[in-house]
Each structure stands twice: as structure tokens, then as C-alpha cells.
Image 1 (cartoon, rainbow, N blue to C red):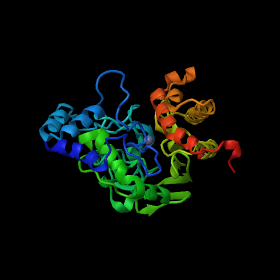
Image 2 (cartoon, rainbow, N blue to C red):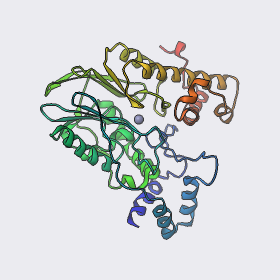
Image 3 (spheres, rainbow, N blue to C red):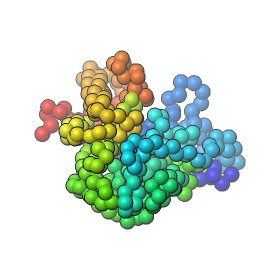
Image 4 (cartoon, protein in one colour):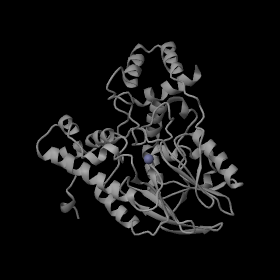
Length: 365
Ligand SMILES: [Zn+2]
């Protein structure tokens, strides 16, 4: 019963029953910018959002409790770290939008051993996830987590922060600033979309500010690259001794990239920088780890497709609804959530086009 109160309470506070959560700039934040929006375009049946809205209108607590109890999820993430190098493990995120089944565990998380303690890159979507991650890292490495690098401020990557010592949490200043301004809205949206998995989760900002350069400790050499484009502050981490490059959400593979805070030109520049690194294994923010650079190529191709599609539709005078209906290239059919993320990108970028705020690459700089 009480878990339903938590899940139902947060979105009401934020007014989140409209369209996820909106910034004052008018761009839909949504939980995660990763499909955190309620699945309101499901082809059949009544969506959760509609159901919740109806329940909110009735304002009947017993009814809300009953609805959420019926939707109760087994509350363990059952993390399954897979070895990807000597003393390095990957916990894969589901190639899905955030929902009440996956509890927001959609992003990749990496664990490194070091002689000074475990190192984690990103902390997952909730306090619960963070606690499970911390114990998995300690079990695998035999030591507690001493350093956590956060790749960007989206909640599927950062809301497990509570489980780690404050002084261990490291990120570029832009990540901290993003959490400062958007974190509470993200929290509201996450409670709304992931429900009870989020119980007890609070926004915790990293206190250790990092810049580009190498942090060497415990037999590891973490080459930190402060970039941007997926958001206004993206951290990629290349651990030189293992040859593992953790790209955060600058790279997606076999899962369509998300764009709620993206600057596409800057994103392309970052992909070009990352492509010069001689890595052994590339870990994207979402999707499988692979050698080679397929994630960089596919991410760039996707950005090219959506920019051309959206700008082309706008230039032809299509409405936003018509733009959403545009066909996508055949190759995107094998990319998870391609149609879903394309539609969301139209919703992110069309208002900017209409406001004249999405300059052409060739007119920029
Ligand atoms: Zn992500």
C-alpha cells in the first residue's frame, strides 16, 4: 500500500501528468531522455498515463493503490555483471524505454577492479540499483567502491549515486550543474515512469569535479575526456591498461539514440574525437560492447538521418504530426526503439526549428 503512495505522489507534485516533465525552455525532459515518457502511444488499450490521469481525476487513494499493487514488480534488479576484460565487468541495460518492469535499468554500467578499490562508471536509475551495484562491485573485486565516474546527468545513469560515498562521486562541472537544475524534475519523471523501484531515491550531485586528463591509481590509468553533444556535458573514460573505452551516451549501438538535450553538431565533433582512440573494446551507453567502431558509425548515421528527416519535413512545411509519420531508412529497422526515438526527436527539435533555434550545420560557426 505505501509503495503505491510513493509512486503516485511524485508526479502529482511536479504536474508531470502532462507530458513527462518540461523545462521552462519547453523541451520535454522526460525521465532519462531515454524513453522515460510514459508509453502513451501504445497502439492498443489504455496507456498507463491515461489510466493514471483518470485516477488522479478521481483522486481516490484506494483506487490508486489498487492500480499500482496490480502493477507491482519484483523489486530486485538481479544484476548480471559480465566480464569484458581482466578485472572489468559490464552490466548491460535493457534495450527498452524506462518502465515499471525494468525499473529504469536501461543503461550500461561498468565495474573496474583496482588495487586501491573498485571503480564504477555510472550508477543506474535508482537508489535500489545503486545498492545492488555497490555490493556486486565489492563481491567481484573484493574491495569497496572508491571512485565513481558519472558520464552525464540523465537519470538512468546517475540516480544510483546515493549508494556510494559522496567523496567518491566524480563528474565534470556540467554534469553537476545539470543535476542542480534538472535533477528534481528528473526525479519526478522517474517516479512517474518507473514507480516503486524509485522508492527512497534522491538526487545526489557528485562533489569531485574532473576535467580532461589521466587519473592513475591502483594499477589503472583512467583517461578522462570531457566532451558534449548528447548533453552539454558528457564524460567518456578510456582505461588505458585494459584498452576499454566507456563512451557513455555519446555512443549507442543497436538502440536508437535519445536527444532531449542534444546538440547534434557538437555530438558529431565528439564522435570524431572518440574515433581516434585506439581502444580494445568500446562500451556504448546503451547496447552491446564490441571491438571496432560500429557504435560510433551507427550513432553518427542516426544523427544524420534524424536531422535530415526532421529538417526536410520542416522545410516542406509538414506539421509535427506529419513529420512524425515520415518513413525511416530500412537499416534502422534492426535498431531497437528507432521509431519511438525518432518520434521523440521530432518533438524535441520541431519547436526549435519553429523558433529558428536549430541552425544548420553549415551556418553554424
Ligand atoms: Zn542513457
